[in-house]
Length: 423
Ligand code: DSN
Image (cartoon, rainbow, N blue to C red; front, side):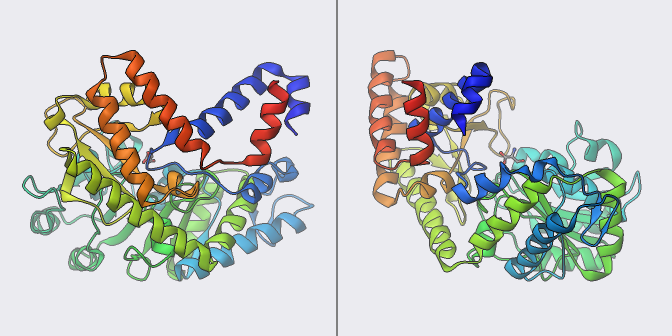
């Protein structure tokens, strides 16, 4: 497959081959990334990309949709089964696209929405002033408490009573503790508001029953399919049957045109994988690894935000080590360890500098690493940051990272092909 690409377009080939090499050789600790299976890659790289299929299975605006209908129906039925949902729309191109569609299916310009503050672990599309959500709606942020860095439910209850939002939209891109979905649902009911949730980060754990599911309680649950769920890059919306007609209409023709049928086929493959018992065992390891890595870093003098984790991710407060998030990200990159800088709650630094890094274990767990490797990774992170002014020390750490990654290879056939082609 890649030989043809190399012959036709060596520049693009080099970019792809180098990225594959980077993914193989580096420790991927970005909490929102993962390695999909070869079956997902094959579906996503299939000629289904050629097909226009505006509409829904059985009701399309184009001919020749009989086979993509099969793929989309499989994705819908598997998603409903996986999450116990009444209705699933698998067409959103991304998580943010899913959120746009969800909001617009029931809200109007200027309505009040409550969502978790981005600076406290929320997401841009949950009401950040620079995002469409913050420009289009009146946003009242939900905060975490300063002392324990967990959701301030008492304050949220007061804010709901005061602002009477039309929607509570609860989810996160960096919150390591479980959400009390029942408590938020009660707040939404008291205000006569829609209760929407975004489980983009937790979806795999939710599907495996290891993180509480908001799906039975929520009017809408949005997610991405490429994080803990380990599927192709894309979005999805689950909802109650009563919201399905408005939701589907807002997705198409309301906010998207032709669905990406190759991605939808890959979503079906991902959901099929997630329905298997092995997926639950994988998620158990993701969770155990996150807890172990957080503990190992804490034992080495780092401070873990909110005191630990109930999921696949956590934030590290770097101030005890006198390094910023920006510098840590750069240093760790030099050592072959990929993380992202992240503000911690009530961060004194600007977001582009940040006092923390966010760490997640889905990707390293996919490549077969366990708790023993988490101890090694904590040591490598600590060592690299302690010697950040010493390039030769960082090269030595990078070599150790390569050795560790070499013991847990990814995409062996593809990497052999790339290796052979490159030689
Ligand atoms: N940007 C994603 C993340 O890294 O969590 C969320 O969309």
